[in-house]
Length: 226
Image (tube, rainbow, N blue to C red; front, side, top):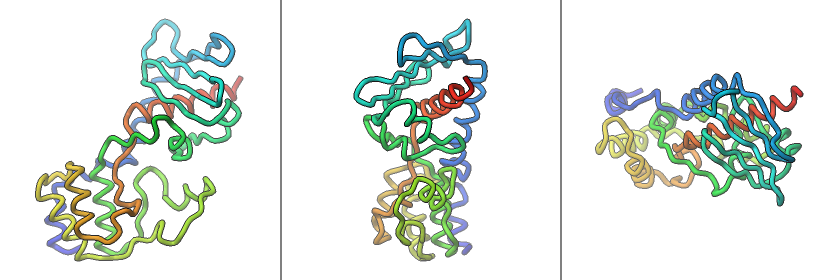
């Protein structure tokens, strides 16, 4: 890594990554749900909560027309796809599945910019090393597991130290900690020809979305035990 590049990125919050964001939300949710029990209030509607309190409680409702709704103290999310059997087969418990999230309404709500993700991408571009997605699982492995069609360009990031330095300089000129989302996208647009490439998307889902996903994961696992 060149001294110029290292000096530019030294103040970026490298710990603020999607991987950490997702893992922390998963750990917190699992701890919060550990004493929950499921009560079927009526056909297709289940209340999930710890007896004696409504803290972190939620409901899962399977509605007509293939709607699955998770709502309650943790937030709310609607998945437009199918029934409980479909959810049980589609959801992933070890990592967050974009396949599920892409079927939520009102669509993907990526609200939090992750400067640590952007930093990993720039380091890969600068040093010419393979880029591993920071969203909790290797991009290629997840895509193959979910049977997506892949092209080489989907996971190969061409080394370009000069572009990496220029992007870092413009991005961090406004905010040395790298938290400014708009500055990041402006810098990528200015100094690369691959602005639309997935790797430049360094947002992550909101806490609401993550909590509801892990709630559905908990619900599926708990139902399988009965």
